[in-house]
Figure 1: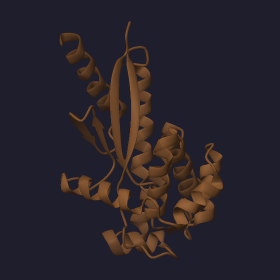
Figure 2: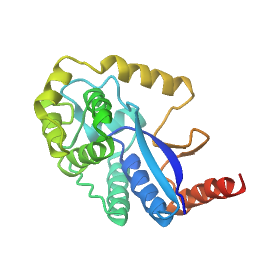
Figure 3: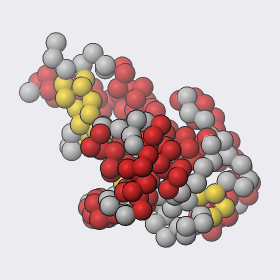
Length: 219
């Protein structure tokens, strides 16, 4: 049986906990149809905090300022995310001194990695660097190390970040995405026809995949 080609675009930021939870749930759903689907993943950039300064900001203070989150709400949210992460096989390692960082450099690195078909591996590496290992993912050396970890050349990564080689391409994509009404992440787009917003349950992704298969069979 020929598998159905499936283009999945994921609008995401590497400091978005729901993005990685949503991705892991999507992967579970895709595995349900592994014998019928040929998925091709593409990651699209979205910056949750484009004005974040280079030194970053304490995560709890950042959330309090941006969303009005109280300390107790923050504790509860972190525990909930930690539990949900464990359910999908991802480790959230929150701490009181954890910092939020600017992700523009990370998105440039991801844009560069597309030519080598490493964007999914690199996205997962950066999710882990930030949430599990609490690294500064705006730092060029951290990003170069992440690139090397997924089989890319660290010095090339340093060069493209120092020269801001992909700055224009990332800005162009971000502008295109927001011009289409996208104001939050994650967003999962299937064959540029259907979209699922948020880290929905596995069953929601399965229903979408089944619909695509049914339409193909009826086609």
